[in-house]
Figure 1 (tube, rainbow, N blue to C red):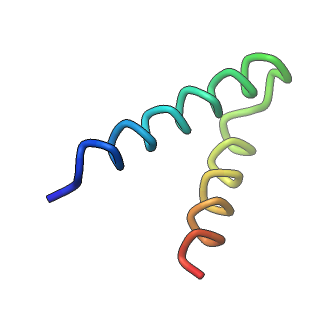
Figure 2 (figure 1 turned 90 degrees about the horizontal axis):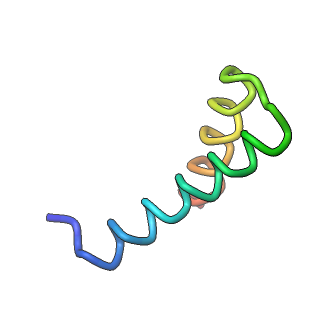
Length: 44
């Protein structure tokens, strides 16, 4: 089961990504690629 701190951190990261997306008007496809890139780096 996920810990509370991990869930909060994940939510904060999603909010941060959304803010960047709105600021730069990034397309959904590019946003998905960025998220995959983040998960790929975190898996190291």
